[in-house]
Image (cartoon, rainbow, N blue to C red; front, top):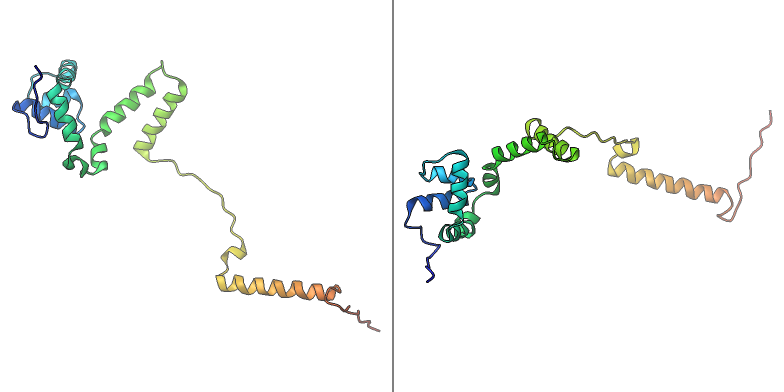
Length: 171
C-alpha cells in the first residue's frame, strides 16, 4: 500500500518539517538535521540527515518548497550567500589536496585569493591620438578640409583638366 501525502501541506512531524525547510534554504543535511532538534553532531548528523532526506515524504516536501512561489521570489544572491562558507572551505580543501592536478589546485587557490582580496586589476594599453581627443564638430571640419586638399591635389596633378604652371623667380 502506498502512503499518499500532500507535499504542499506542512508535515505532521515538526522535526521533519523543520529539516525540509532548512534543506530547501540550502543548509547542509547535517546542519539541517541538528537545527531540526535532533541531538547529533558532525558525521553522525550528516549521515542521519542524509538518511532522513531519502525519506519519500521529506523529499517531496523539499521539492515542493524549492519549486513553490515563495522560493522563486527569494533573491538569488541571498540564496548563494548561504553557501559562501562551505564553498570557501571546499576551495581550501581542493587547494591542499595533493591528489588533484596542479591546475585544479591553482584554480582553487586563485579563487580563494580573489574572494579575499578581489580580482587583480588587469592593465589594458590604449593609445589615444590627438584625433581621438577632437570633438565631433572638429573631426567633421578636419575631414572636410582633408577632402578639399585632396581635391585640390587632383586638380593640380591634371586630373581636373588643366595643369598649373610653375612660376619662375628672377633674382
